Image (cartoon, rainbow, N blue to C red; front, side, top):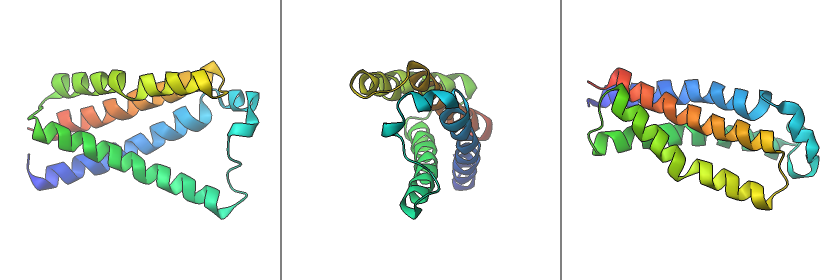
Length: 135
């Protein structure tokens, strides 16, 4: 993969994933966050909480960049293989972590579903970017 395709894949995936994170983390089942409001930040009231949002966006780009880099290292090309890798990574890391956290942290089950779907979507977006931009 050429360096410019590598960079474009990261930028495209990170940007699209940012909007997916907004939807799955902030819009879908939004009212369910109120089931346990004591565990969530009140965004906008303090500058450090706005910094948390900014760092979350940066980490989304890091996630997409790491995925693209893994595809480059292991010579994963095409939609089928990159989407398969995305689904397997989701099953290995974010899904078990979110479920385990939900067993010990007060979270509404639909919030866990939303966050799990958000992670799957983010990884599939990165996989699609690799499949689209990597020849």
